[in-house]
Image (cartoon, rainbow, N blue to C red; front, side, top):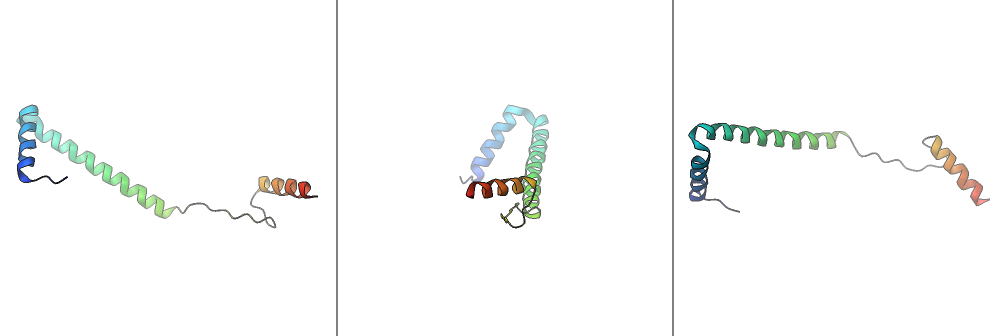
Length: 81
């Protein structure tokens, strides 16, 4: 979607008529703050994803990770016999 100067002026004129000259700066300011907050949230989420790698645990029956895994391995060994 490509907006030219004519379309932008038309949208601004309609906004000026609807909201009035006193409220229009406040609306623009709050819209700018919302956009900045949204960008900041996205940037922080991306940084968090880069800092925390996904957890990948390989199964190693010789050296289990926790007690639950130990119990599962023992049950698998019993079922094999």
